Image (tube, rainbow, N blue to C red; front, top):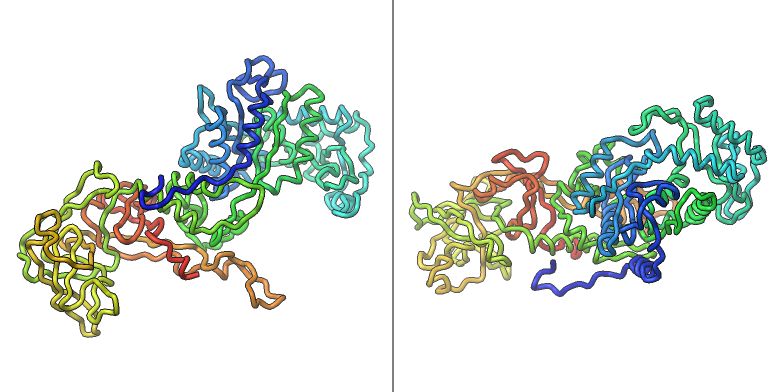
Length: 599
């Protein structure tokens, strides 16, 4: 997707591909069975050998809107499955009934589809809900109790916290750790029956309270929650903890490579411990899933913390979750960013185990590169001033022809009306030109792009000295596309629209939401006791709404139709506020990076 004027940038390294290729070469997963749906070892044994060489998954919790970091994970997991003859599952990790909602489920489905990914492949539809596995999870918890690997703890939350120990000191066994299998089983059954209030008991794995990894100190695996679940309703009043549910979900779905971000690295020992115990009992098929961690996406000029994003929305610093300035995928789509741009960006930055801060300019550059290749060109004057061609017939209108895409001549040309009165950009005229200025000023000539060469003869001003109109004379023999077009050489080249045939439209100029690269971070020279608020770094000019003059064919733009407005950047018809014949345009990205020079 690179421009012919720009050198090809090689994709960055991806260490996970090396792992996958080594596993395939060793035939590690070649003997797995797949019954056609998630299930236990016995369920899968009834099916044929899995036709998928690998299985990956994207497992979002439906408790919010996806952001740019999720896009990296989506493209990684679906991309690996596609590249290596596998399948990628979309699984909703909906094990927390108090924070999840169908609204988020729907938005996640739309976002994954928008990125061009599909969980439907070779006759399989791999869309799953973790909550549909609750029966298996409860049965597995009971197995762990029966095998002596789990117990019901009746300590308070504060007592458990105090007895957990520290990073340098061992924890203390719970006084309830020695309960018999029969007592634990009876209590867990009563927990499921709803006999106890929230927090009265909790089911814990029995591992090692002195383990150096604090996550192995008898982690909680089931808690009591009297809450209605969006999928299972009121069937359950006990719910599995995420660290218990997630590895089981992977194993039931025959996931081969469970790819997650680095913050889960410390949880991997419990992930492996749990699956080994269940496989020992014959409940899960081997080989078991392998958890692999990679560094999450960190971008300059944005925040990806869910807490901070919620604060921005709740406190109305932005208009909602689909505000084009937010790093949410619904916001990106509304702004006009392209799914192909996300894909190119993901290829460029690669996948590693090392945290790094990626310059937002690299993201915008990927967008520009894709849009430059794909987006048709149109003309818009954002700061209009009247240009009057005094020697052009007042009642005449003629057609000039502009290419729809200079890199794709097969897309043809469109007619642009030309008349005596035009709109040009305010910056394209200076009564007293600065050094090196090449556009219009008295006695200077410039070309009206796709039209004629004109010579400036003066201007009109209002009582305050503001320019209200620029006057020119045109050279009739110099029309673009005619033999005389090159008869007069000029250095300035201006875009324009006909004043009579153009129309006024709302244009929203979006920029970076924050004015500093690391919002909320301490800066050199800050007092030692100073605590910065990330909201203090909001960019007050991140959104401007203007009225511009557009060429007439843009009236027909449909929501999400995107164009390059010549000289100004890439714009999209807003998918929410646009109406038939009245599209509202959002600027996705400028033609060039202006932040690199501004710092």
